[in-house]
Image 1 (cartoon, one colour):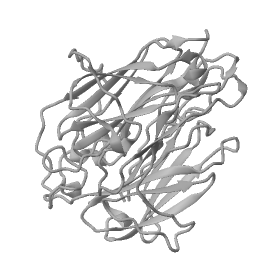
Image 2 (tube, one colour; image 1 turned 180 degrees about the vertical axis):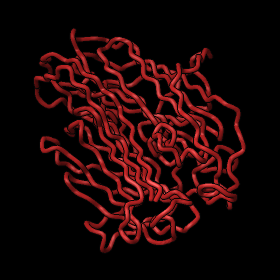
Image 3 (tube, one colour; image 1 turned 135 degrees about the vertical axis):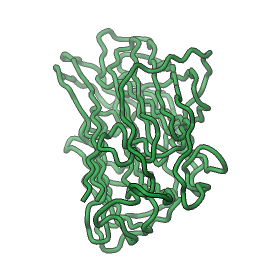
Image 4 (cartoon, rainbow, N blue to C red; image 1 turned 120 degrees about the vertical axis):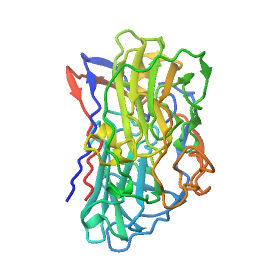
Length: 431
């Protein structure tokens, strides 16, 4: 059996010393923090696919249809099951994102765990997504996949099970987390090699981001991944984020190309000296099926900070790599960029944080694999009549943007001395 482990660790180094401050409890995808009445109202991602209710066990799960978007919810400690029917030739992707509401308290180890099981209960793939910092509740998630050509019990046609589990500390809020669930399939390919794709995985070389010197263009990111702002390609783009807000963008990356996103978080208006948030600003990249492709974070004090996320060149064979920095770039299409500012930043700043994105798509587009059928309507590819991520795969899942305001809940003392926090983002075990 070919066994494939996929991990990605996100280092969030904290060096706080007994800071006493109001703690704004909110999500990074929610409203800007405010400690008094008249809190600013900010649009929030509200999953808006077809309603589905996952079963509590594997006995009678609802069946998900390919190309559809769904919404459900999870309470603390709950697991839900969903069924999908797969053929033997396609690569299937099932993505799940949890979107906690403003005011939800989460621990850094909280998140969602995804498992894809064969009809006989064999583990085909696994993914663990974690928030990575206390109360840093940006939408969190990723995807599991059944790769065409995989060895073992997960290669055949049949009914597979998606299991979604919520992991929460005892100190975390018990309110339900809305879920966004997607089911996509990539057609099989012709030819020899693993899954018919052939070739070898791309190597990953960490290097300084390419220099991008074009004139800056204003671009407002979207708070819902479904409506991610379209970035046409290489360039410099400016935006502003309030603390507790996440913005999404999408960038076309073709076969043979790589993506680099360098985010410069500018100086904010500081209202209290000594403010510090480990993992206060972050950038995460997801592939066209919303699987984790890479990311990083940096501490933020109100002074300028920078975060860079990079991918290797997109190759079909990347999906077979044992390096998680490579296997997250397995297919051409629109790659999502998630940019977040931690809600705690509002406790020592006011207003918004200026963000400058230097986006570089490098490499000459190459011919991809010979698919046995077209990509139209699949959500993959960057040319032709491809469904744009943001319109919803089936047209049934257009985002609702809901204005929510919140106030900080009480005051607290945060003491974190010399702690290095890392996030286990994924564990892949394709059979």
